[in-house]
Image (cartoon, rainbow, N blue to C red; front, side, top):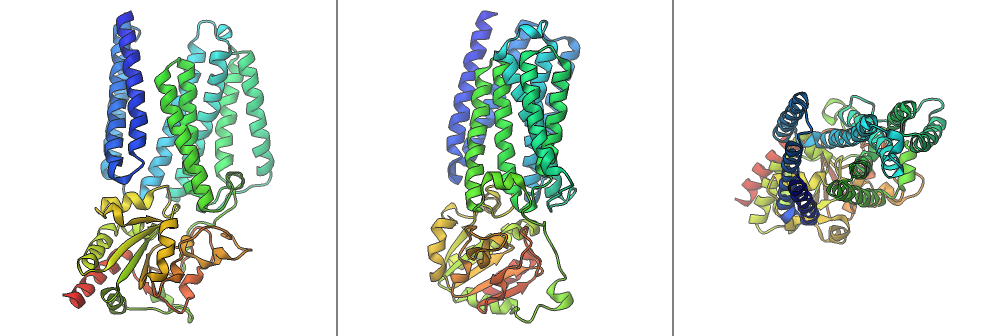
Length: 472
């Protein structure tokens, strides 16, 4: 038994080392897939080692094996289905659900460990303190992630949901679970403290995310991901399992760093985001075809845009959520390849918060086999806009709005893509609808901006055909 236990311990450490290497490989798009495969393989190895250990120790009943196998089969089936069927537009919701599952599972570990202990009062702070923190962080992550997924899916309003007394409640609830944590540490055998802590933490997860507007959802996703990692690490302390601690802290640290980077990209503090109130959710006024574009907007046709692209020397594509919603990444990639073959210098400007989750546009474009060398981050591509003959914006809104450079509005100070500095700008959009910040985009009324009102997939396909006729 000792031999098996030692072997499993070393397997867990090897799996943890693979997690570290896998995370490092995810630093670059070219090696990200390899990193993901390595991490997934390490997790499979850790699961197999766990099954080996419990089999050797004979600590699971027949019913326990039924639950274990059923859970494994169900989880694998749901994961396979999600990987094959969930669209890129729904990936942020899926990530939020993953956060919920991870946080909830970690909290249940602590609850189960405290309830099943023969003498909970003798556990000591080594178990009871991380157990209490695990319950708080995991339960907050669980309920908060479900609300975030609901906002992204449209089940819950994307606008800030504030009710009388909400701010006071968001002060009292954290104070309550601080008190509950102290109570549970001092009296680990108190089921009142245990279940009270669960209820209060679940309620706080809801009240924390409801007031946060849709514009901040990318940052919220990253923050909840960090919470999930912290909960898993606490579960590792409860179980005295080093590999679980390492894996959890990797997720927590990377999620925390990403949250800070995302907040900086929006020129907002994390505290300000948690307070909530930014963004009204997507709005969709009547399309130009239905009511006519406003007088100050200059509509353009497919041939107008095709001529500009065909005779340009440098073109910068600016993808946004509209590209994902139309599932037009392959059409964009085909158009870009046609221009590249014609000798046009093509690149993609990717804002850190473009889309609805960190890296959304990068993954979307990688799916269309866009060369990694053409993807450029905001700081690298902004100096290139003045040299661009055409900047083609596909569904991006707030991240291109020049009003961010002026004080006194919802996105003041937010770093943006300097699209308006290009020699000519074309925006593909179905309507004059607002982005998540709920304000007008001044780029659309710039005299050198042409509005191509169409569905992104249909418009890009038409552009490829028209450009092919000009360059063929």
